[in-house]
Length: 208
Image (cartoon, rainbow, N blue to C red; front, side, top):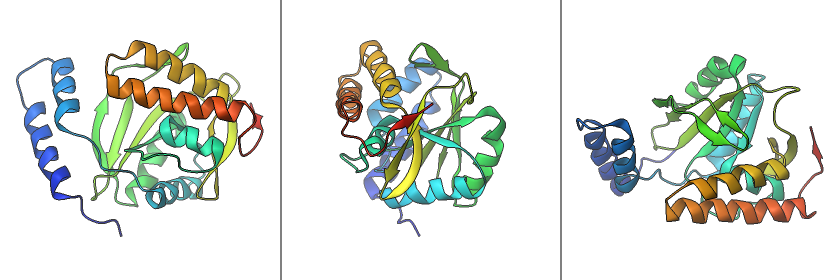
């Protein structure tokens, strides 16, 4: 079982609850939330367990973000504070059920579109378990018109992730658009890994 969250993360969680109770615009509360709260690290074991549960439910989950670029190389290069997954619209509810069986409950829904290369992700549904480990589900139409995908690995477990060129495009655009220095550093780290994978230092070759 996952351990309980640290006292620090429990305190920041309560501060975050107070922030979202403020009578202020959503964008203001989102900014304040980023200042007072950060998810605890998402362990590799919890990440793999979530992916296995989705696979068992015949759900195609595409890794993006930090875990997505590390999967291209086949090793964890830095600490990640959530697991970002793209799932097809048609599989969103089954994905929530599969994660729910592991103790992940819906934390909040973000209806705001997010930049995704030349596209936009249509919001997200964030789920969290008892240890405050976070999985962020992004619904998107996968298939012939979907983004290019490739195979990678996390802890030796094969996974599906965004192709290196897509990771580069997405993180480069996000790095330009964000005002947060912390996010700029995160996107830069993702870019470096994706470029390394595109240069041939990846676990497997891509497919569309």
